[in-house]
Amino acid sequence: MEGENILDTPTSRPARPHFSSGPTAKPPGWSPDKLNTDGLGRSHRSAHNKARLAHCIAQMRELLDLPDSHRIGIVPGSDTGAFEMAMWTMLGQRPVTVMAWESFGKGWVTDAVKQLKLEPTVMEADYGALPDLHAVDWSNDVTFTWNGTTSGVRVPDGDWIPENREGLSFADATSTVFAHRLPWDKIDVATFSWQKVLGGEAAHGVLILGPRAVERLESYTPDRPLPKLFRLTKDGKLIEGIFTGATINTPSMLAVEDAIVALDWAKSIGGLDGMIDRAKANAAAVDALVQGRSWLHHLCEDPAIRSRTGVCLTINGADRDRITAMTKLLEAEGVAYDLGSYRDAPPGLRIWCGATVETSDIEALGPWLDYALEKTA
Image (cartoon, rainbow, N blue to C red; front, side, top):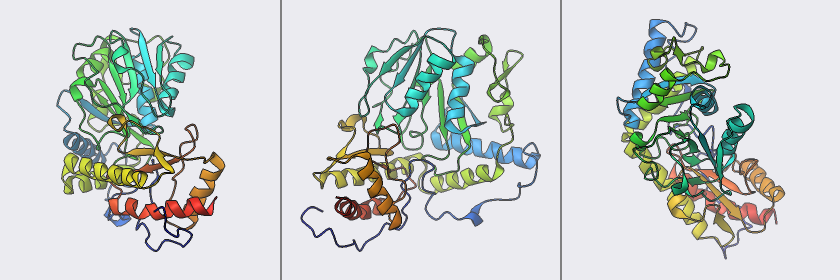
């Protein structure tokens, strides 16, 4: 803390220095021997592996409190693949609004403008802020990131999404699910990946479709070629097998089993409520670090829209070179990995606060931030 002889190496260390915002820390107590390997070396279409995929889907549904009205499927390409699949297959029937306040939302703007050539309405805000949510025209389809992984900003709730909307809501929710209780009646399409709040492995995405999204898929054929990996319908009907374990392409059963281990852990700590409580405690621990240091600040100044998973911080007078020097020092000391802000975001630190991180490790990180700041002065 300020006033201490912070040039001395701190004596307390985070037990697990994994603060990366994706892939994130594995669940506490994780080890490779917990993975069920019976399905390795077998076809993903075998009865055994289809059952394991279906089991993974059922566990996600249970933990998310996902209503029966919404389908959930495992798709290729992580969250990016899942969201682009939704954009390519459903956008174009009606006008589109694309909202962006961080790097990935800006990526969806690029897709809509340059790749899909939709001529969308673009609503943007600087890092750390939101556009005017109440100015959204819901006669349009609307895409947005529920929680901006690279800006530390989230929408406060689903109240700004009307129940009688004409367009579809497309929520990139990869840093939101399992850390928030989502209003599924307000969400027509949601995507995420296991590598965020679950601490799972990368490569696979999860696509959630509400009934209005299914209706769009079965009634609208976009005027663009669709690669095989994006095709969700056949002969005008949804391919239901995708949402029961018959994946579009070959999944990694090792990654699937890893996700099942993470879901089992989540259930053991109280399910969704337990996950939310842990994320809240971790975010509060980072806030305490900020409150105790005059040189450290939240990139998002408004607590009502501040992320409780990817928490983004700025440092007085520190440019990207100094931030890089700090993060390298912390990594070399083995106390904090991958703390730097996203490459397109303002220079600063980003501390993952999802449920797989231990609050005590965040608390132990504080003196090391002081130490790294002084050592790189």
